[in-house]
Length: 342
Image 1 (tube, rainbow, N blue to C red):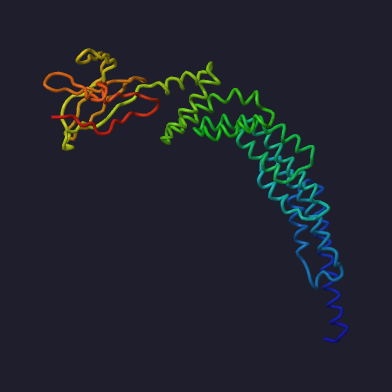
Image 2: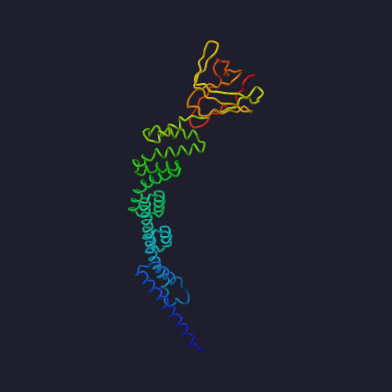
């Protein structure tokens, strides 16, 4: 093959490469015009991916196709959002890198997320709505959209708090309500606080954080006394509790026998008397006993049975009962070891 033939082949390949690129761009533009931006993105990116020898006659084709692909991505993302593919739409927009398109893509992404948040609220999925609003803010949207997000956030937080309460996540709900109150939704948040406080206290009880739970329940009683949750809080705070302990002799051996708590103690000259209601228990072989459902309050006097009668350990310094028992809130009372004389 002669030199001229070789040149002709090269020119033919170059012309063919340019024609192929042009065909690709034409097909992509047609797909976009038909309302199929996804297809347009695919075709434009195919042209943009070509390089080297085949593109010598049209060196700007790749950059132009890449730009057009990014323009089509914005339209594609809106189509995806319209069908509910929010996360995919946001991912598609994240690939828009052209400096002249960044603001448009950012705004489109934020608007898609805000619209999705509004739809989530309407569908009763406030926690998802809050997630969408947080995503929208991460993209630094324009000022008008920021104002829209701020206006929606408080209401979404209150709704999300209600969902968290239903899921048993009271402490998280309280945190959201506090933030909602700072975001202009204080009146709406106030209505959810009693349920959130009760749910938070129940979590604290489950974690054996009794002091924290008592404080939470007391706050509920103090601030929302007329709520139905306050009634439950009052019952929890003043519920009967078990009183347990271990009765041992001077050598530390468990003592078998009966025990009881007397409600009243009256000092007399040369002695004392107790009176009921009484609450009874029985020790086992190791001296352990548990008296269930002793009412809140006291003090109660612990007595033990001996020779058919009831006896109380007395503090010799003042001749008063040595084992007074007060039943507090939320948790059982453990008296530990009680030494009784022979």
